Structures are given as C-alpha cells and as structure tokens.
Image 1 (tube, rainbow, N blue to C red):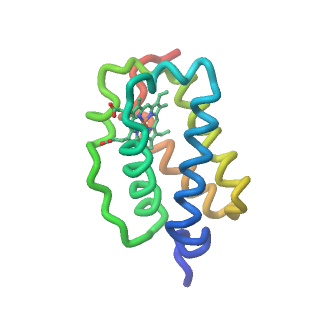
Image 2: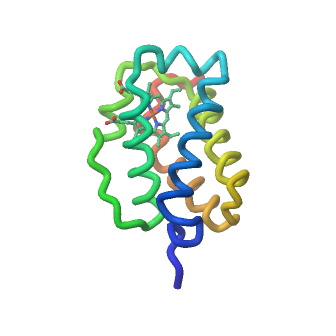
Length: 120
Ligand code: HEM
C-alpha cells in the first residue's frame, strides 16, 4: 500500500507545499512578526523533513524538539489555528487527497500543546 508520502508525490511535492505554506504565513500581518529575524532557509529545511517523516517518508527529522523550538514565543491558540489552516489549504491546493490531509490534521492536533503558550 502506498504511504501518504508516496501518495502526495514524495519530497518534491512536500518542498513545494512548504514553500507555499511559508509564503502564505508571511503574507498574514498577524503571523509575520513571529518570523522576524528567523533563518527561513533552515526553518523550511526542517519543516520539509518533519512533514516528510510525518507522511511516512524515509527522512529523519533532526531539528529541535517542537516544544523547545517554540518556547518563549507566546504563540496564541488563534494563531496556531491560522497556521494549521494555511498548511491544510496549501496541501489541498497541491492536490493532496483527503486521507493525507486528515492525517496531517490529526498530527496538528497532537503537537498543538507543545507549541501554543497562550489560550487566546
Ligand atoms: C502548526 C504546527 C507547527 C509546526 C509543525 C511547526 C514546526 C516548526 C519547525 C520544524 C521548526 C524548526 C525548528 C528548528 O529549526 O530546529 C519551527 C520553527 C519555528 N516556528 Fe513553528 N511550527 C508550527 C507552528 C508554528 C506557529 C503557529 C508559529 C507562529 C505563529 C511558529 C513559529 C515558528 C518560528 C518563528 C520558528 C523559528 C524558530 C527559530 O529558528 O528561531 N510555528 N517550527
């Protein structure tokens, strides 16, 4: 049975998703300030590998633990939802099927607690 990773088109598609996703995030005035001064090349590289491995690809995530990476940013729940929605919209826009999207939504719900620091 094809993995989600194969279904979506492998690392090439994931890279396109991640590029589009961060363009969309940085287009949101409420979200952009979080990324001031951030090394976007490194961020995108880590996100590509993380998403590949979440989808069942062979890549091994070697970035920071998600709680450590986001600690002290004071990320609001409402901003987390926005970022999650942008990822889902981008996946759909790249033709990901609903099974793949639902798997990503499940993982987004699992990691929420590690990333969000403010209820609002
Ligand atoms: C939706 C789920 C999210 C996932 C899966 C995720 C994933 C990641 C990953 C893999 C990194 C790189 C860690 C490293 O380089 O070692 C990172 C860094 C970062 N994330 Fe997230 N993130 C999420 C949500 C958010 C949200 C909601 C915000 C802010 C609104 C955010 C802001 C940042 C920033 C600013 C960095 C850069 C930290 C730095 O390099 O100093 N993330 N994230």
